[in-house]
Image (cartoon, rainbow, N blue to C red; front, side, top):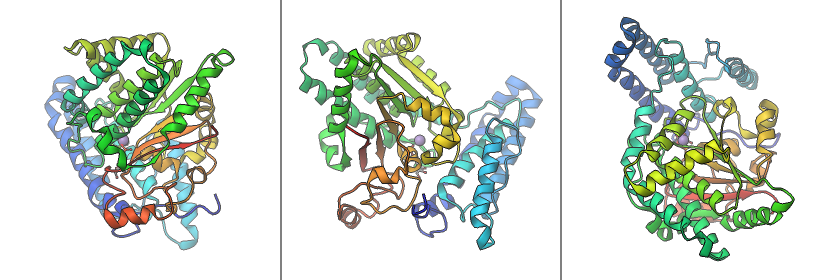
Length: 441
Ligand SMILES: O=P(O)(O)OC[C@H]1O[C@](O)(CO)[C@@H](O)[C@@H]1O
Ligand SMILES: [Mn+2]
């Protein structure tokens, strides 16, 4: 990694990283404090006075955190005794060692953005786990659920579309299957517009029917490797006699509508036999506001199953069956909520790396995954994706990401400059996307 470029950082005044640390993260903290306030009577009903005391404690810890951030205080070690506490504190020591020569200490603005932003969500978790008996409260749960309810219309359309498609599978030729695959990949890509961290926790749901918009949105896909994915999966299917299990792994991002689009894609892969198993990876703790935890995953499938609509509830019933039969497998791993870039995975979490190696294809959803894949560094736009992965190649992989951070690799010469000239905010609004593949074909 000797010649990898510098990390994006809040040091760069005016950059998106800087503005995020200065404005958006404090707003997210304020919202979290507000949410705790609003649940005060619920805590009281459940736990009596102890619940109220816990709420006060969590709020005071979060207020302290907001103050540290806004006054650019040094990053401090975590104080609890959770499964990953030591790893976080070692990572801080590592950051300190990088700055030793400059005589500075890591602080909110003077550290890699990826590190401090992850650390902020880990500190929110610290405030909650230090406040029993409300120590399993998810401060973002409410907004995640709201996102799902606000996207009901496009959700119904999508589930109905899937079920209608499934009833015709037998009669479809390879080209028609491919067209449908491309549609569902793009829906899963644009589903990533709906995260709640970019909007500071404000509602960011999908209001329109994506299926009819795909053609209009296609010019906004800056790198589009869908053909590679199709060739790869078709090849895997052909070798099924020798290798009977074809695994597609999906590293999930946001709950709500985005998760629904991912599950629809996963259903398609099984029902067309392009894959025989889908493995999902979610977050162990509430993360970047809208990221999926096991609770969100189960909650959404439960909602879909009980939905008062024939095709939607059919999806829910099928999905529960996939889980029961072990054709859909959900994995938890703390690595996903550590600050490390993915190039460090084989060292920091060799068990997870070995798990991913079993996949025929790994789909990485969303912006944060892209930042971690590429190390959140100031790569030139034309640097090949393979190079920016800095040795992270567990299996063929593909990022489905709408652009919400100032990083993009694998573009054509001049493409980035042209985009910047026509739309100065092209990197940060989620308007553009990539379906970017790396791996042998
Ligand atoms: O849910 P996603 O797509 O990972 O988006 C989260 C992204 O939103 C942001 O909070 C926007 O800045 C980024 O920090 C992060 O990369
Ligand atoms: Mn997210």
